[in-house]
Length: 292
Image (cartoon, rainbow, N blue to C red; front, side, top):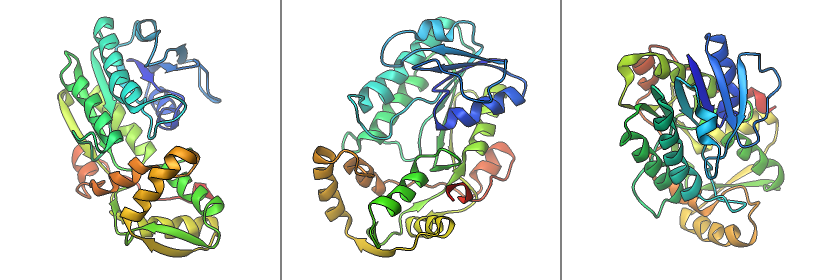
């Protein structure tokens, strides 16, 4: 199969492209700059396109299938949730329809909801609607937190401990928000199966790893693998929410945004056997050794 991966140089794409090549597929690696990552083989062709601008038609030409990965977790540099996560997804869907693509796999997120108060999750919901209302042979994957080299969430926790926590690290609420971390390499397996197995068409899958993990436990694990010791201080979520409403405006490099704190109210876990039941494989347990 010739697979166009839109967002190929991002975190998930950097793990997915080699997996697809190893599985025998040819890959069109689409990114804004059209760059080639180290280690990509001859089976990877690079093309440039921006989901908010131009070039998608040419980028998807000749593809049998598309994997759409492009999304932003917070707004910055003029890139908005609406432009990238919602309208950007719609533009990729429309380009795929024009290109005559057979299968379209869209990576969304657990907790998506039609609620403008939760801007990221709402934008991902609207992106999903563009996929599900299309004429494409589509599959939607909703993973929980993803871990692996180059990830966002766990590296942000590490950065917070190192640069923003002088002896004390703030924990939202009681730290009992639950997550179900999934290996990015297991997500790559799920994507490849979603591309190649015909019966998966018109399906939405919620995915996580083999265990539920609280925010407290995640911070403990990051401290363990990095050797950084901090005193944990619980802070009421309304207070953190008020703080991040200010830092969003005056300190955009602050590691967490107001919207991300608000999104903690949404569940970020599913059944512990969801991946095994859906794809027939036991996913890897949380392993953050790469953070060391």
